[in-house]
Length: 372
Image (cartoon, rainbow, N blue to C red; front, side, top):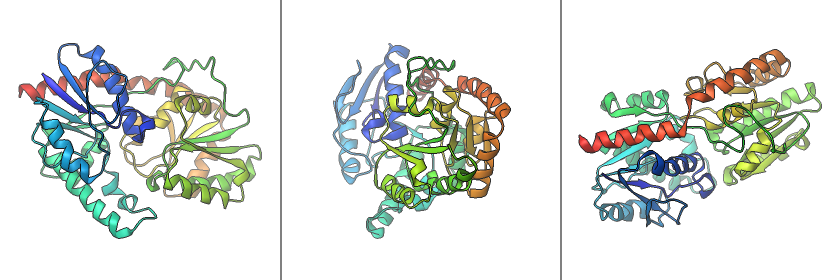
């Protein structure tokens, strides 16, 4: 079996964020999990891997991707190709499997146009997205989703799709410098030694960070030593949030950290008082699981997949209510017993998510598709 993998988003620092993490962890584990089949990686630059690589210096979400990537892939005479995202070339002839992480741009359409660029340009791109998504979902041999929630969302927006075509395969949890599942923090220097709330992720509109700033403004007078740390990829949305933070009366107690490395994240998770995840929509939600790995109590939005992924190891709030968010954070800060309970439950919850298990399940799906 000869299988191609679109690995252009390899690594979170390549611009793919969580998608980059997904590709990186899968590709890294593949040679050990499957020694029988032949794999071809399509990469923008060479990545550290023993697998064959084909240069595909074509950026994602571009017309060039649609025009030329399919031809490049078809030349390799593959049995199957796996796209880790919905951006499948429309003219591709090779059979393919696609991972759909979320349908945020359908559920939160304002995320598609929340930019400083021409609204007409982004309206065109939004409809191009809908066409590409339709192509990926209808033409794929199999669809992988990273949560049951996303599977059900696909069936809602694409009711003609057979549910048997969709397989839920959970993501794994990356060891950011500690012995995963045990919370061993030896050798990691904490970013701060004073009490602080932590939120990690990009600053896209659906991440709901402006409401987090407002919630912090409510609780800050109650906890004079408490700070808020927000860390994420630096882009136009990061800069917009930065302006909002500077306008806050508590700006001197809010730290905005751009482009954190894995080492930076480990330092930030260490000693955080609470981890707050206010997102309006997620397909999986890795950051709160990373926080649990460091035994940080989690306060999370109750939206979309998050109760499914985090289980009873988090305290939940309505993400559309600043008051509800502030109240959940305040209540947990004032309840050391509940914090201890969440730390314990968090270490149990993260045992459900393993990159090796994910990789084996995906390889099994490849085999089923090719044999079929």
